[in-house]
Length: 92
Image (cartoon, rainbow, N blue to C red; front, side, top):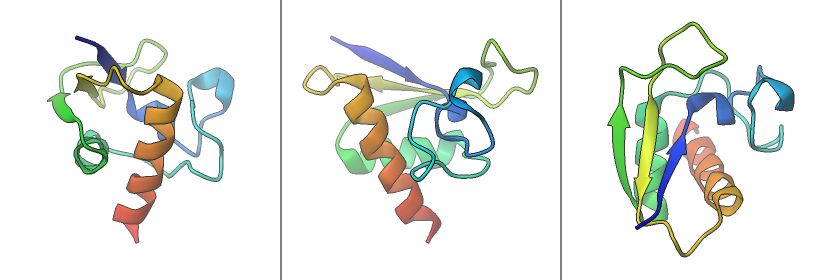
């Protein structure tokens, strides 16, 4: 059973790659939330668990994280790309 941790900073358009952004800038959005990410993960077809009381190690602000369960058929990069595309669709 594979669990992937997704932090909101991975999709944040205001962050650089060295600050934690994991998706290309054209897929990034401003101020992503764990609710948007969890909904996008479910749209991709995986179970998502939100942990709101977690803080990304390089940030001071507590934004939470999303745990993706049973995503052993996709790499994390593929998962992040698919989730980022759905987050953009949810924002439209």
